[in-house]
Image (cartoon, rainbow, N blue to C red; front, top):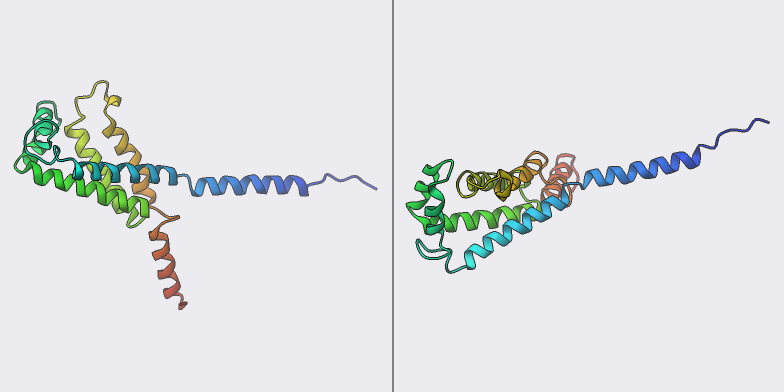
Length: 176
């Protein structure tokens, strides 16, 4: 009688490990999605509820913040454009951050929400935090880079996008 190598235990362990890795890979972007969604929602709500921020002048106002950043911005024309109506621009940024945060957290139009977050971060990097030295002290560039994986991947799991996609497939297949 020959002795064989027992492969069932090894195969089970290997399959179990592979299953864990597949699950970890599937949900790898979820912590990033939650962090960015909560952060942008908080930033938007903070701006909307801050009485000093939504003013054209004064300590802590959007107007004074933009005027202070203008001289060191990579694209001062963006600031000039916003300074035509700083309060309106402040509301637009706040509502944009709020929409991006909600969309990202819920996974609703995930790629579009992430693109919005990336564009907000890009505009802030090119204006407000451009003069940060060394460059990695300015957090807007890091936020821009953090948004890019979500722009590419969207919100395929634990999201309203996944629910909507599943419903579309069911309808296309004739299922109700």
